[in-house]
Length: 438
Image (cartoon, rainbow, N blue to C red):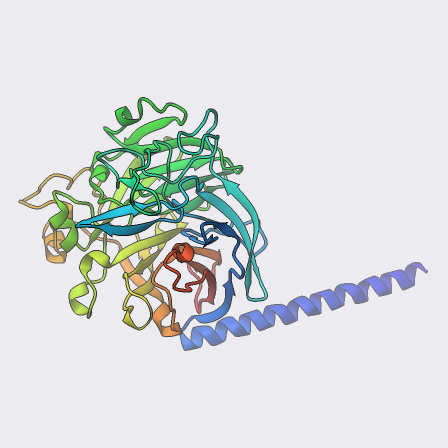
């Protein structure tokens, strides 16, 4: 009996090893084939079908970020909504920012993808640690603008009635995970700010630009730390932080602004190709470096304004390598920039605090590529990883990017809750890369 058991066990082990070898061989062959071709392979498309009703005919959507946690199954992700359903209505010569669901709470969604479909596994609304939000009347926050004079004036859905401001409101555009303390970090466009939250959505702290802390003196429910560079206060409205990521070791956090800062003015921002990526030491919670990211030159394109070429997300592969999502504001056949690049930060100039004021008559945002070279500012080198337009990517806002493993990248679009009833859906696409990202 004992001998028979050993024989059976040996056969089982052999079969298992053979199956593993077959899988490994297939994967290796797939990687070798892709490497030979040198092109990514579209590995899957998944859609949020039959999204839930949120009210006023508006359905679930607005996915603005994406992350895969290393210990989760490969088909499980986390995403976030932004500030919620919002739009613009022109009243006379004025464009008014509307919030048709003013009590909407920005949330983290835990999702899975399988059989071409996105399934929402869990909804995690963002909440105050104690007390009540002035808009919702509960611990749950809203997505309504923070401050009068600094943010867009909030109106109701018909753009007739002004809404109260919400100092705790967030316009969430990115999500990161710190494995050291099991918390999420979110980035926000309003201040712009970086927000640490517990896994249940409770806000722990909010990092904002220096000089803004006094603006929140009458809203003490969220701990505020004004440790970010003061220059970030010059962000254009609705163009603050758009992406955030943490290195796998939990030591460093990177965040990128969507568009050039209005430094020294809006005119500079409109013409600039320079975006800022900041590096933060998570042990101290303070910035240690900043890099000048150079976007695609719109002068080489048709029908694209320089100001409309933006960073939509980033993913930290390690301390020296970032995966960056760069896109234009067009969709379908009009789109010209929907690309993923790797950035090599080694050797790039740390510009933290050095070019906020004019140097030789120009700020960082006013510098052309030749100006940067003359000022000996070395930008991170870029290498194209993926051009979505080669796969007929139909959406304007590819806003969430993450790595599932060293060969697999996933991305999701923000359909703006399809508030304009265009039929734009929420989709998550996966690509298998020909070479390992490291």
